[in-house]
View 1 (cartoon, helix red, strand yellow):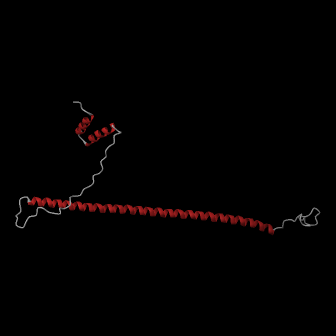
View 2 (cartoon, rainbow, N blue to C red):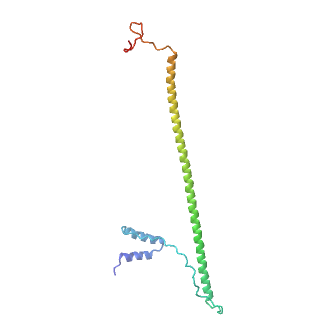
View 3 (cartoon, rainbow, N blue to C red):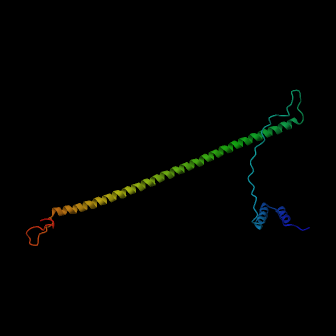
Length: 180
């Protein structure tokens, strides 16, 4: 009887002595046929215990004595109820921890945003101060250059006035062409 590749793979998986060997065999199988899609199972939905019964069947009447199985029935019912209560407490604790975690994360994000906004505002204030300083520096420079020019004009006013133009003959100042 000819052995197929699938039979050989199943046998290799069965002969794997450790989990490492099992995963090695499975990885080799995946590597041989790389185009084949791999089924990755999703995490199973966690089911809670069954809800308590609405109608209890094994109710003992007032005139009945306890039978030999009643204690075992009682014990199983009690265990089931305790398991259900434990599961509810665990779910409650888990939800509280998740809420606290989300609260911590949101608080940290809020603080980080506040720090970022504060630093941004500080950078913008510094930038504005630099602009104002540059403007005031330029204004002072233009004022000082204007005052330098006016100072040089006033220096000329205090000294001898500019000589008047005279005619070539020297008697009257030269007039403009329109003056006659």
